[in-house]
Amino acid sequence: MIAKVTVINCRRRPRFDKAGILIPAALLPLTLLSGLLVGYTGISPRQLWDCLWGTASPEISLIIWQIRLPRLIVAALCGAGLALSGAALQALTHNPLADPSVLGINAGSGFSVMVYLSYFSFLHLNSLFWQPVFALAGGLVSAGLLWLLSRHHGRLDPRLLILVGIGLAAFFSALMLVMGSNMENNSYQMVARWLAGNLWGSSWYQVRILWPWLLLLVPLMFAQNMAMDVLNLGAPQAQALGLAVNRERIRLLLLAVALAAVSISVCGGIAFIGLAAPHIARRLTATTWQAQRLPATFLWGTLLLPAADTLGRCLPRDIEIPAGIVTALLAAPYFLYLLRQPEKSGGKK
Image 1: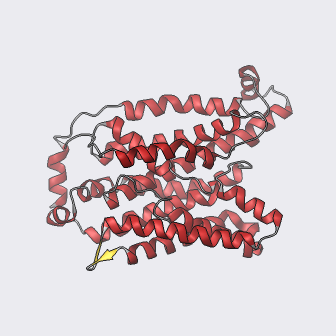
Image 2: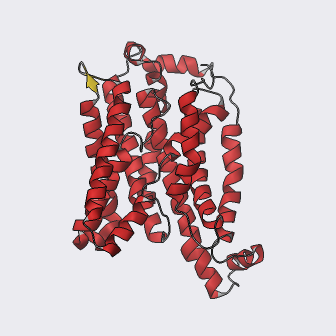
Image 3: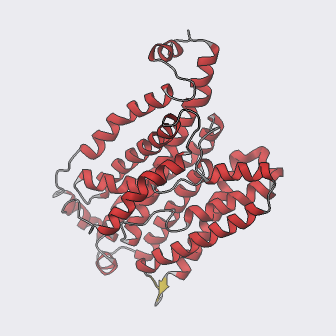
């Protein structure tokens, strides 16, 4: 029955404002170009052109191909994963303030990766496999606790989900501080940089960690757009339309956790991308259909994190601000603004 209802409604889908897709699609190449040119060593457009044709100096080629380009790709992939995770969590909880960092998923994944970095050094030679696996395990533990503690009368209570998530985030963050206090100075500095969301040192190795996971998870998330639309009607209406509400909620939660955990395993403690990207997409696409919102959310995620990383590299001349700090500084005021604003629907079905 759900399929029939959806087919009927698809014929009446409203035209949507393409700005949600066209703006990030236009800004992304400019952002990536800026990320290649700016930094501790400035590169001119002519040097970049020479590098593309293989006539640049070895130093310039090394900076572009082995340092800046993989770093930008890692930022774009992580931003896309976090953005889609946030969109899924907002649809799942019916709360526009839901985000992997707010619900404790980032903290759970971060704690698990911290355990891996601290106590499983014999697995570091194959971190291409183990690092995202540990992050996913920590995210799943956090999500399992979130699911169990947020149930009321046998059903998931979206309002409790936010409150429990905040408590879990504080709990895992405290555990990370306790672990960090017992580390040697060199190990603690490495972990502290990772927790701050520092993309410094990203290489093609991190790209190889990310892309197989995202190649699997992103299409699966896009395939959930119809279920997300029906869940948006509310649990009673979704059940009346034939949707297995609990099963779809579990599936969405697992996808959101997997996307956030894999991204966090590489980029570290990046917050608010999963909050800001879906909101920007929602306001600019002017529709409630997830089939149109999710691609816009994906593009805004790929834009925001590389832009934050580039901004952190070019603002001060002598130091580098981690991308996680830049996103927190820019998105925290937006988060407070959202707390004061009633949620406005982007369109009508």
